[in-house]
Image (cartoon, rainbow, N blue to C red):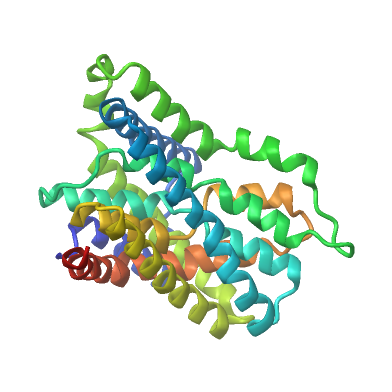
Length: 312
């Protein structure tokens, strides 16, 4: 699979920032683009869900959700014992790697669709379901007698989180009004690629801006931010293949598993674990894992998906 032209927008953003350019999207524009992408993903998933809802999908959903529990449990001891981060910081950072990156998923879907590669159309449901289990696990991992954890706020934060509202809301709208969505899909479908390209330009700028935050614990965080996606992606790929997904579906399962949240979880962790150094998670997910996945990971994950399919 060749890298799509949109990846070059991401590279342009990094290059512009490193070259000292003051290029940056207006804050309101970036927020609008984020809202657009999450609603578009949710709507498409809801429409597909209306056509494919079944008991098998329920089982698949539960198994996919289990990844959001497993991945933080893998990351936590590595961060706490090998990286020697405090229990609170390790828990917060672990939660980022149990959730998903909307941007990485959107790029993967765009690549599949641009090359007419089939995949299970209800995958946006899995995006929504993977947003919150890691948040809960992160709070539970941080809980002990010495650390103060705001347990009362986590439920409200998860339910009211912007990403959850937009993704689940779009999913629900697409599911309920699947026959009427043609009225809005010219906006959310035809403009998707152009909006995603601008989003990646801003992500490139932001990722390059995070590079300077890797001075402390930089070597470990860079290694962790690259190795963790590979480990999680391998586990996700095996699950996707065992569930009988198409090659495109296996690929998307790997991408979801290998990504790390830089929108929903960072916001949630600031409320749920206010005493943690939550900048570690954002720096690693956006400064290391996101660039790695966009530039090198996605082509590798496609190769892995093709390799896995014949064995199941």
